Image 1 (tube, one colour):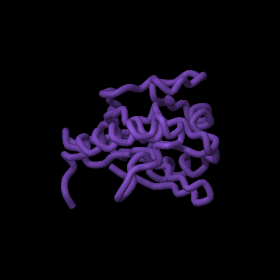
Image 2 (image 1 turned 90 degrees about the vertical axis):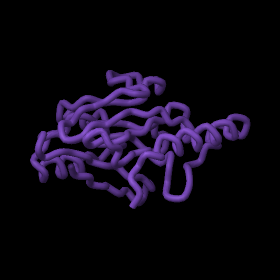
Image 3 (image 1 turned 30 degrees about the vertical axis):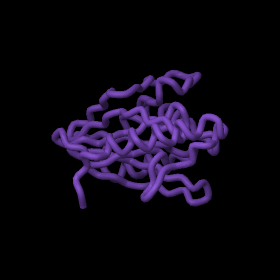
Image 4 (image 1 turned 90 degrees about the horizontal axis):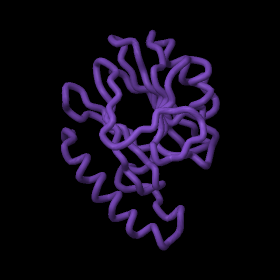
Length: 173
């Protein structure tokens, strides 16, 4: 399995390409509009982009999901509760995407946005990584006050409790 991070400094965003050279497939998580980064990484690893996945609706930049789907034929996946107005896989808690060497399990992790989902990587049934789209960061969690102070306190508690419980099985470094 390989993971490549695409850092977009001017947007304060990270995208990821996660793939398996043995299965010949990869996924792109939270792509920005300029998709050349992702197609080059896939080409360098000799894999095809099978899925492009969103962790939440990004209102701060234009996603490259539809462009990647158009150019590569991959499937777009996003939260079932996100209300996307174009064809996509409507992902919900417990859905799995099998990429051969590993699978991605969908976790509903509201907090940063109501529809936020995370992708838990499992290899041989063991969790090995998680992609949260900014919901979790080293030492903390993302802002949960984006929809107002009335909603934020209850989300913060739910997000922190859910994420801590879900990630407690990760191997310790």
